[in-house]
Image 1 (cartoon, rainbow, N blue to C red):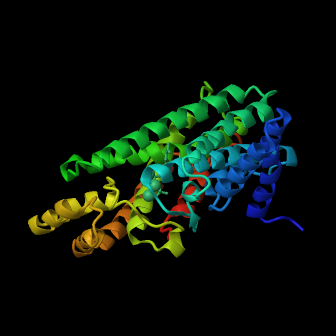
Image 2 (image 1 turned 90 degrees about the vertical axis):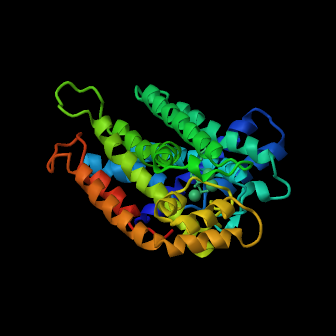
Image 3 (image 1 turned 120 degrees about the vertical axis):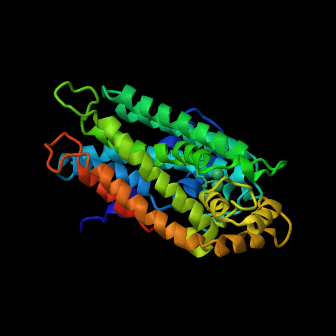
Length: 355
Ligand code: GPP
Ligand code: MG
Ligand code: MG
Ligand code: MG
């Protein structure tokens, strides 16, 4: 029987995980350290939606216009799991920085009493696994340099976005006039859109042989992909900000901390643009506050300014705007060229998501 999409992708994980642990074992590193790494991988890489990783496979199949052969699937799955490793690195370290408690409905890794700040090194080991896997699985491929340069470019952008996110959410001086939707846009594009949206598609494009500098084509495919996927990623992170405020732990697998963490999120920026002077004063006095009742007072202002209606409008506009961007790509294209369907599929996966 044909394995379902997700099951097939999941079945590619175990050999990859074992190969990473074996890399440690081959160097005769202590058994407890090898077991620690295995637990780190099991706890932090599995348990999410796997959308980013599976998008490499979906995009590659759409671009080729057929199913992947077993050999092609193996390579696409390694790339997909590299993105999931990057996501795991992001989440383990982001939870330390954001002081979260719950992730994917289980305690955050650094909250486990035997882990604590070892999580910082564990996050590094999730990220280091990526270049190791690329070197091992693509060493005979001319595309290795290109895959490495995509991941380096995207990781640096993610780090820069996270920096802007963190320094905008200062804990000592709460000053909402530092926030703006313009600053918010920079944060979300850099910390989320490049790695979650551009990276899977760019890797699939390279895997299926799309090159950037084909003199025969009028459009530069990677530029076109970026011009659609960055707004798509921005939309996705606005949803994440919204769900941090409106989602339940059952829905999103985590407990929102943006208000108490003084985050420059879409919700607070939108509320600031709609608040009257009294509501603004309540936000100034309570946003980022850790005392009892402060988060509740902020949420009440969000409700009063009609943030739910504003969010519904945002979602509709984003959908229309991104659909318009996708139409830059010709409706009919040849094999080996960019296809609308890659982006339509991605947009449909996230539009109006509740988790
Ligand atoms: C999402 O931010 C962005 C990331 C998880 C990227 C972190 C980047 C690093 C370089 C560590 P978020 O804090 O809103 O995510 P969540 O709501 O899932 O905690
Ligand atoms: Mg964060
Ligand atoms: Mg966070
Ligand atoms: Mg969030």
